[in-house]
Amino acid sequence: MAPLSPKAMWVASQVTQVFALSAYVYAGWSYNFVYLGRILNTMGKDDKIFLYGLLFNVFYGLGLWSYFAAYLTEPGKIPDRWHDFTRSVGKDLPIVPTRFEWQPGKATRCKRCDFIRPERAHHCSVCEKCVMRMDHHCPWINNCVGIRNYKYFILLGIYTCLACGVGVATAIPELLYAVNAVAHLANGGLQSTTFTAHDGFISSGKTIFEATMTVEDAQAKCISLPNCRGFSYQGAPTGSLGGTPVHVYFKNKWDLWSTGWTSYRLERVKGASIEQGDLFNLLGMGFIQGLAFALLVPLVFTHVPNAAHNSTMIEDNYDNMPNPFDQGGCGANMAQTFGSIGPDWLLPIPPLRPLTDGVSYARSDTPLRDDGYPDNPQIVNVADYARRGDDGAHLLEDPNNGNLETSGEQDITSKICKAARDLVIMDRFQRLRDGSKATHE
Image (cartoon, rainbow, N blue to C red; front, side):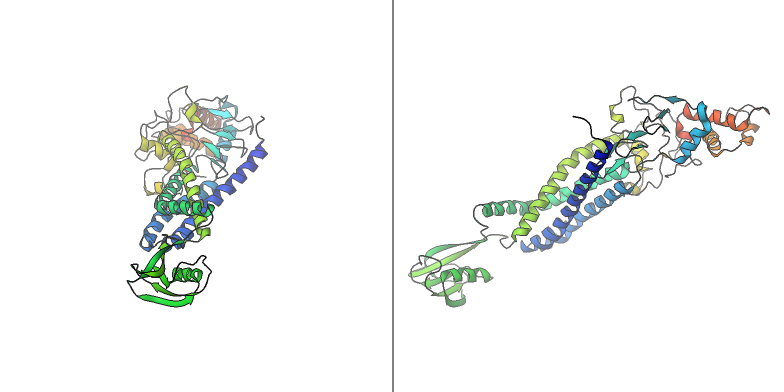
């Protein structure tokens, strides 16, 4: 079977997103407006509405926020300053063939975009562009997952998984009832109440109502009376619920006495007044949330460990060397995606203190400062001046600064670019920053 064309994959991604977002909205609506708003009240569990609603909606709201953040955020377009740098260096920039392996500190050329791209960047055939630190294209959010939105994607999985878990766990008793009720419906109707005929008169309790009517009408009346436990009339049971009208006594207790009378006892089914539409919506909610939970658990247990090892789904298959970007610890590796550890880790917002700009990444052998940035200001300065087109004359005052030699006949700018090539490309693109702090573009 031939692979789908980029256009077909784009259409499929659009359709998948519509389905995913519709299911997300329905799961929230059915839990809040059907389960909390109507069913719990009917079942006499009003005291649980606030707690259940708080637990579910905190996770649901954060999950929905994360969804739109992951969908709307540009995943990692290669910035213009990188293209400016490659043009300024020109042929002095070494370019290596793209291989399915770790290529730290090496620039490659995309065969489809025909652009030179930095380390860890890959081409997305659906979006038809290269994405920095690309993980994969996700049809559920109709977007690539890259350096800019990988944090949001992970939070989306975690919070949606928690919301679905809370939704299903809190509704288990009602879901079981709904399954049983719908099974009765399939067998000939949803029986909300049942009556059993007995010989004798209901002697205990008080008569809460009496009237002359058919047995069928008496059953309907008993159901409508809040405290009715049954009714009695003098005579034998009628052959049909229609029959001849009899004088009926409705009672609030059940205790038979004497003979010559017929009594019908009312058996109420718990939750019997739940409407059929609500029952089916409750089952739909349970199915969607249960399915989402089952699908998201493996996703979370795939991407969280990848982030904890500073790797992607693509890079997870590389075996030519140990991960060169492993920072040696779960927190340090997660910080490469989430930024320096802080409360912003819990929210789908850009990292308040990002540790990478997506062009270059700290390697395992890179000395880091306390703030998480590389401890090599000399190379940062040389790369910065080359990027900005500065003549770098003050760098020549110190012959050891930037490894440049003084010569009036040499072009100073070209020497700075050559130094930037040697120091940046051979020692990774960690040096291509605006100043010494990474920024999101």
